[in-house]
Image (cartoon, rainbow, N blue to C red):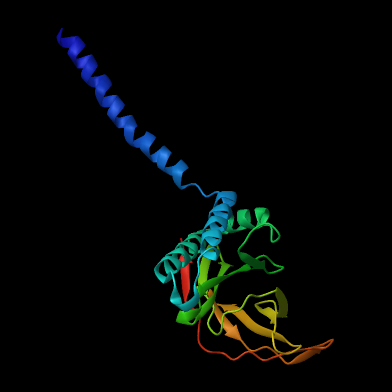
Length: 216
């Protein structure tokens, strides 16, 4: 009888040892990044946001909450692998959020209409860029814009200028802002004045360093 009791106790102890392993496995599956689900969630939040009346600061609390959720999802993309997975499934014609990627696939910029005009924040930009083996999320200082293109200007083997451009609404001009990555930090950079067709490329003002959030 005593030997049976010992066997039962041993079996119970073995089962308890296996429980954390099962929980860890389940948590890992729950936390696994899925690019398609991420974009679908962003689409859902933007649909909710776009359905709200924002004139005279109506629905402001809900609008701010939705924008924070969108920002949290974008900044929750944690690694170059997840970033690349997102690139492989993103469709500009299908998905609601703006997402531009540089030719070298090291910099991506998310943009969306926030509907927070009464707070002076009608557009939000968040950049994600690869620095070494890390993915970094960064705000873009200066007036936010819905960018239409990211071009590259290679100055040398160690320095690339990323030219973010959009069409100005009042004049037949293209507004361009330059950014470069120095020591893992995304910073604004001067853009040389040039002419391409009828468009003049303006020199961007340099306000300050961007706010960078490194994802581990």
